[in-house]
Each structure stands twice: as structure tokens, then as C-alpha cells.
Image (cartoon, rainbow, N blue to C red; front, side, top):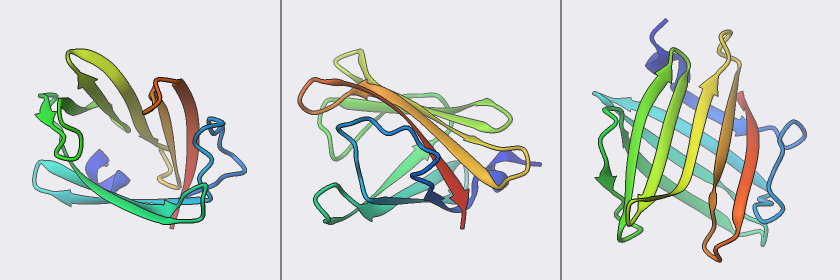
Length: 135
């Protein structure tokens, strides 16, 4: 199956199965992947640690080239498939990796595992694994 079709749709974080970083204790998170030509529109919606609604949309071009991130001056983003079910994203600032992650869909298409590492706004390293169930 085409991995773009397998990842498409909505995914809700299963907090009980996830390993969240102590500094990333959101209350809920839903990802929505929309396919748009050779790109993926990735929308995040949820509730943060403080109980505030948050949302953001990113356009991921899957060609492995770096593109500027509008919301973060001097940050470049690249995305590509690293396997038949795994989408990888890397964020660089001044040539240095500040965050990288992957989204891996289970072969049965029922779960998505997001693994991420990086440095947060305060300069503290983080690492987490978030498991999502298909909605």
C-alpha cells in the first residue's frame, strides 16, 4: 500500500501507551495528515499542560530538501520517507540539528508511533515516544 495513503487521516494520542518527556506533558493531542500532491499537510490540535487549546499546521515536502519554517526564523525543515511506513522530519538552526522525529505507521494501519528528540526553547534536551490510535 502507498504509505501516503496509510498515514492519511486523523490520529489521537494514547497517553497511556506513550512515553512523554517531563517538559512536554500535554493533556491531549490529535494529528491529522492530509495529502496534497507531493506534500503532506500535518495539523496538530490539542490541549497543552496549562489547559489551553493549541493548534498548528505544517506543510511537509517529502523530497528531503530543506525549507524555511515560517514560524521560526533561521530554522530549516526537511522531510522524507525513510522506509515504507516511516516519515522523518529534521529541523536545523544555523546548520545544527535542533529537533528530529519520525512518524511510523503500523503495517495494519491502526497505530502510529511518533519518536522525537531535540532541544526545547529553554535549551533543555528532550526525548519522547507518542503512540497514536487511528480515529
